[in-house]
Length: 136
Image (cartoon, rainbow, N blue to C red; front, top):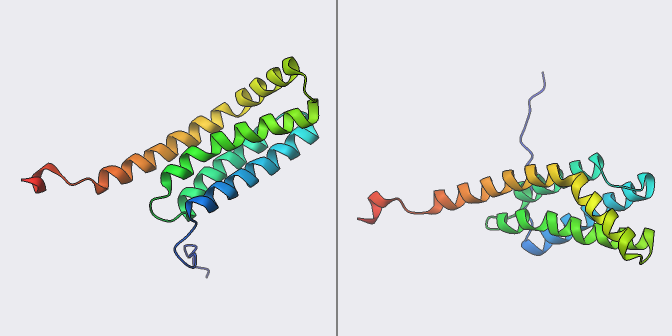
């Protein structure tokens, strides 16, 4: 008979800088792989973005939720424009079209991840806010 145990992490968790670096490298690596293999981003990068949202919220220290929510869209945009320019060269019309297509391809994943992240962030903020009854 097996018992399921919750994963315990040693120490307090990732700091803000660690979250930014980890999410950027994770998203950048899979964006590169998908652009290299398929010449466009899609479901693999989208799932990695969702994992980056969840992992940062789950394994980050208390108080790092804001950074965990804000970083993935910025990291994806920066990585996408970088890798598209590497693969396509500096042709503004081609880079622009590929960049917009990349953003459109992962938009549902970014929206779902951001909605979950902001829910967690705002819910924690509301729980820490003192109630009106205790104020007087």
